Length: 121
Image (cartoon, rainbow, N blue to C red; front, side, top):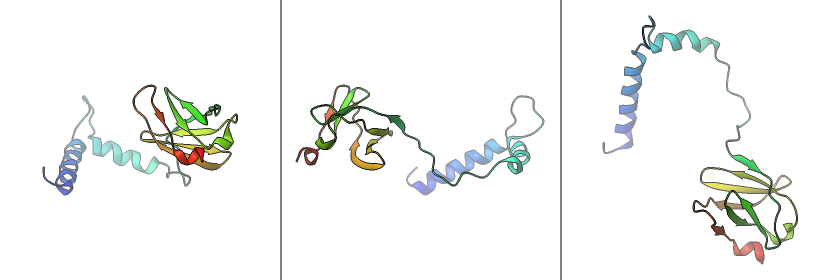
């Protein structure tokens, strides 16, 4: 496989093969079952769905918050306050009320610290 187009074609081929498959001894194929179900599906909601995990840590005296096993900096004006954190797979976003105050790449190693110098100036 040398390109994204090739990969997409392979996925399409696997989808077509799966549409013809039968589960166990059922009389309908996967495609037949989906054709019956399709009119019953509801439309997707208009508002976006939040996929991150919510935390509400308190900012410590060093201007840092604990999230899972790691620490991240936030502006020092927030020392002592609780903030809202949305943890995603690759990053986290910190909010004071509804205002974004920090954004960090997520740390993977346990006990790691990510500091942004601007938060301390």
